[in-house]
Length: 352
Image (cartoon, rainbow, N blue to C red; front, side, top):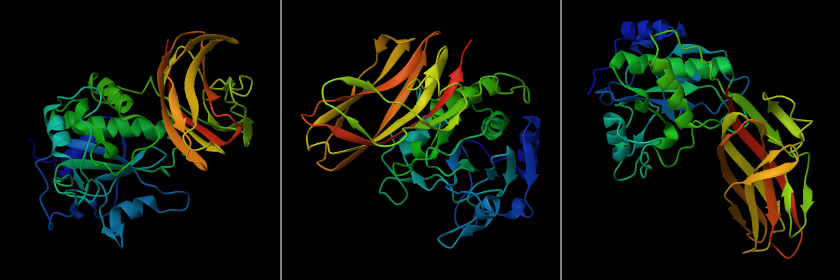
């Protein structure tokens, strides 16, 4: 159980951790304390804003909107890495969530991830997260394609570590909104287990010394256009559209999306047309050394719906030096199908 930080203590903790802090005018008295409790606090919750260019994102988080009054978080972390403080107290960011998750956060008793959530705002067993969590709303479209610039990600980790350090909490006191509510998907574009690992690294050092040496690189790739996938043979997905490819030199590799030594985490989204109902296209990650197949990873099956079939598959692995990772598809239907779109979105951590 922890008493919430005062405004002065929060600012001091953030600045000691190395955050660039902007105090939005009026933030110290901007809260929802009149509608419910604020505290005891137990953790920090990370969100994405679902906003694009041209949005006054800080103003939105401070004031809220017609359906949800502000503040919508303790602070808004923009793409330039600035922590804009927007609320001091209860904020409309977490809503209802799972009591089992709350207990796991309080005890920091879970493994890589908190227990699966089975509650959401308004569900019968939900508990009030707005009273118990600080919230960071982080500027991002939330579509899985919008990048998380290194300066922003660094600020997100440092701001979270600052609050955890001030309360004497560990990294497992940080969760994503999707880990609290079963109808939320944020933050999208990175994995919370990796985020917590970075918070742990920051907490292992004196305040202000962590500089994100292990910062991830953002990779967002797609196919050039629809293509025919014949039955009966594994086929590597050729990623010709490069929205963001910070690992570099992708175009010369075609289907390779990550090169070792590295670890990566993200998603592969594929839309297939013409797959008969009940028929299957299999997908798997495969490790290559040059053009030689060296290892296959477990298969995921995409079951046809008789029309357009869309799935999102996880891609998370560690890759040894000298190897490249590809995604391969196998059409097990009796007829050709069309891969209408395929998008890969991963964060890649290069390793020594």
